Image 1: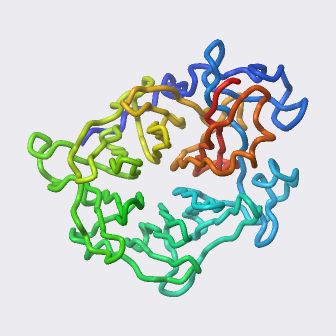
Image 2 (image 1 turned 120 degrees about the horizontal axis):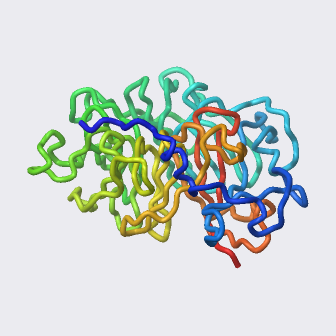
Image 3 (image 1 turned 120 degrees about the vertical axis):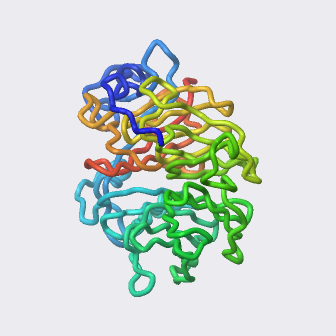
Length: 374
């Protein structure tokens, strides 16, 4: 099994090769905030055209009917944190809700970006969460949560009712350990780091349809696309399945039927390479976004796997507000651009939001905007 490489100083500078100055579009400023005092942070640095802007970071709210803390700081200017996000991992967007798996709180934090409310979903009894790692959400709000302490995938309805669980010990393998989740075309996809595969379930019946690869322990010469530590999964609009393999330092791509197609990235410390790839997402343009917990960056690849850009700064960087600190997950949102428009630099056109969870530090959720200069 490939080893995770040592993190070099060069790897920690993947995110833009150098920090983009705050005067790129809006004039030099003295620090973060809004208005004349706002420092805008862009990637890549000049003279390249800006493509990603850091918009906001936050770490909590107040339960139940108003949001404060870092989340509200960019919305209302309030600063007190009375209900912090402790250690976020998996993310999902559905409707106006941002769902955050909080492994320390043993809960799912649910932030409504339109109503500006936050609540912690922490069911009791048989539905109690132990260590929620990943979440996949239907349009109606029903959700699946992978829990590595319970070794199960828990299913909840749109009204929070507990509907049952898929057990890692009876899913077709011996003691499967589910981590990443995705929903698409009536199927539930779940990565299994013990079984070295992705389980594909029929969502309606919970029946296991097949695994990816079909024979997880076969040599790659027999079963191309072998997985070693598959930690996350995403499905694009064409039904292709993307799996971040942390041990192989690659993202592996499969057809809808599980046939291996190709890989993105390799082990190393250069742009387009990975040390510890974790969360991933595929946007509407087919771009693949991958967070790396070792380099503490997010990398963007085009639909063909070409490296386009790395952004984010490691904790302790000069631009602390944009720092990523042990990032775990990433998701993309198109429906709430207006909420962050006041944070967008003059002359920059926002196309999509990129939301990243950080397991450490004060800024547990970082929001970036992908766009272009007008």
